Structures are given as structure tokens and as C-alpha cells.
Image 1 (cartoon, rainbow, N blue to C red):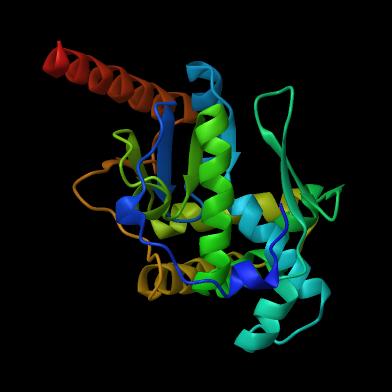
Image 2: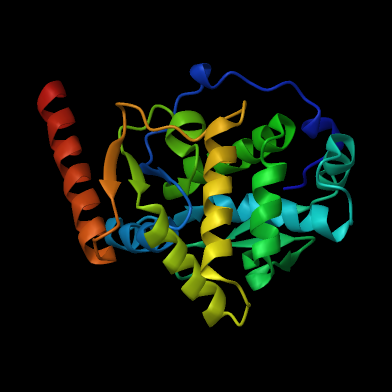
Length: 251
């Protein structure tokens, strides 16, 4: 689904008037480095629905912008470059979605530190966010999904009853991210990674459009000292309890 210039410059729709379909949609929000992607994949497999990595859609657009070589602080240039992104989500046999840019899978090209930093910067623009929200809603409405990101429960699917907010101590998150970078052959100091994480937290929480929030509608989970299996078990149990409560209230 292409990000056409006209769509990028369209007015932002009110999410209050958007109701989710009956498909099972689980929203997972949280800070970076808390294991959202891994947890989402395992929870989706347990629930029998696909996992939708919304962050990958933002990363793909950020990659497009970087490949145009524009100044990330130049709003007009960023929007013009983003408008060229021909983005497509294609279901896969393993229960996820391939992200394609110009009909080509983005693969690991969107997992570099440069793309991570660019993603946080370009995602502040409402024109980009609204277009990607439309893509995400259409995809989840069709297939059902476990959806992870930073504003899934607050903006993309505000009415789903299944909302979780994952967080962890900054030093734990930095150690996890540092290990990932080293495993990928990318040089980085632990101190620099921690600094980047804290800076990203400030940007994500302080941005004017779709800031990172955790209100009373979420079930918070501190992942600092939990295994992935323990996190998934907590979430699956809460989903089952929520379904039972709703059946009892409507029965």
C-alpha cells in the first residue's frame, strides 16, 4: 500500500470515532528494549492469530527517507521522501507479515541503529503516522492480530479490551540492545546505547502526536526479571480472564 503524497498531507482522522472489528486484537505497547517483538510472536502463536510488527512499517518508511539522503530535521523533505514509499504487508506462512518496500522485502535492513534513530524522528510527523495507522487497522481487521508498538492501545486500537504495557529498567534494556548489536556485528558501547535509549524515551514520551503513554486501560508488566515464557503466560491468562468477564457480563 503506497504512501501517496495526497494521503500524507490529508487531515488526521479522529480515532474516537473508530471502532475495532470483532477480530481478536491484542495491543502491546511499551518502551524500546523490553522484548515486545519476541513476546508478540510467541503470544500470537499461542492465540492462533498473526503478529503485526507496526514498528517495522515505520522502520521501512524511515529506510526510504534515509535512502533519499534528506535532512531528518527538514519536515518538508522528510514528507516528500516518505511519500515515495511503496509499502506492502504480505502474510507469511509462519504467522507474521513480510514488509515490502517497492515490492522488495526489507529484511534486516530496517534493524540497524541508524534506522532506529531515524524511525523515532520521522514518526513524530502526523501525516506519516496517520497513513500507517490506516494500513495497520485494515490489516488487523482482516486477519486479527497481536500488534506491538508504542501507541497501539492509545491510538491505533483504543477500544480493544486486550492492552498490555511492557517496561523494564533502562540499564536492563541497554544491556539487551547492546547484545543484539554485537551479535549483528555492529560496534557500539554500552554507555552510548544507554544514552540512546534514554534519549528515545524522552522523544517518544514527549512528542505532541501519539506520545508513549500507559493509562488505566493497560495491564502493565515489568519485564526486567521475567523470561519471555513468563511474560506470555501472564498475558494469555489476563486475556482469558478478560474474555470470561465479558461473557459473564453479557450472559
